[in-house]
Image (cartoon, rainbow over all chains, first blue to last red; front, side, top):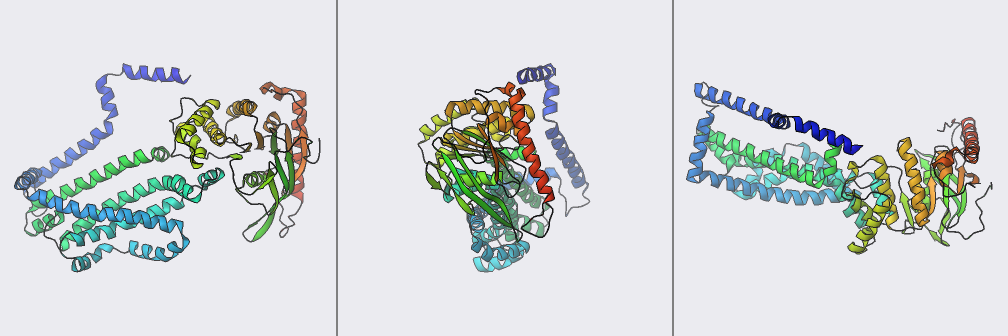
Length: 275
Length: 280
């Protein structure tokens, strides 16, 4: 039965012209590209009109500036500085956050002690503490890493704890019925079941961490993409400012796409549930 | 028909005066009262009763997932109070781990016991074949139909080669045709390995079709109301369900359960203030 149905389906697909099939398969991508293209075009026109010189530079000028900054090697320096700050801060946040989340979920005592702090600090706009961090950790990378850490760690902690706690009791009982030890239940049931939550927490952390880098560099830095944006806007170099903004946007999008891939690999069953 | 579960053959599994009290929202209620049952090796026992009679609780106690308030479970002449490799549990709901493939789910029990990977893999392959899931080893549970998931569930419980198989309404969520197919499949598998089975269901025809003996339970608190011997020769195929003897047995059990439900509707709960209990 199933084979017959499948055969028919294949047959129908074969009869469609290749172009049409390609179009159908990539329709949503095409629409997205079209949208980008259209806005880009409007941007270029608006920029060329010279009406808003402090806000908009034409896309073509931004591109030219990008090439110029890249050729001088200045851009690479800024990128490396920001990436380094981001990755170190985020890596520490990820490791620490996962461990703290696990501790909170597995011990009521830890939860009772830590939870008020997590809730309170998560609810405050911690970016406000960035100036303090510059005082404490200095103007170079360490202060920015600390800001990234502080911003990124909370979604990781909260998601890890929630993920472990929301493990369906049925799975725990199934493991128990096979005489699994507490440790085995932890590694073979709780962690895999929480994994999609943890990855989602990391994804949120990336977004917040990038904000941390930029804000940290706004307040006090000698290099980095945030510093480039801040300095350029102060000097009315709107094209250079936009180069920094686009690069940051690109980094964010790339990071989220990579983690979505990771999520799909780690938790193929979640994709199914979400549909 | 006998009113207690006594059999003259050696005993594989024995439930001794099991009682269970729960307290929920400050009120205590009695789920099970003095349930005793003796099961011979290789016997297939179905347990039926109105919903809320504590069938599932009883099965969980036998597995060691819950501790009874009073009473003991004996397997091979030893009291057991926690899950062990001598008992396998097939859950009512889909309890396969969604993050594991069929094969990895089936292997789970052996993996937890720390058996060598190759041995576990070979054993799992045998069981996957036994339940008819060959070719689906690398599928995830969400990619399978309800019937296939319950096959995998059964295979997972069987990998640790338990002497006693505890099944908690394993076919309840399946459609009528799939359920009948699974019943026939279960009998085929049972014929090949002769496990001692406790099978909880609220489908009376399912209970009779599968079992050597059917235990009928009273409404809350659950007690053994009667144990009926199913004297229908094996191997049974689905046509058995249309024979007069089969219908007679089903009818007799129906009447008993109906009695219980009616009684429960009229009796006030002795545990709390006069609340009329509504079962089913």
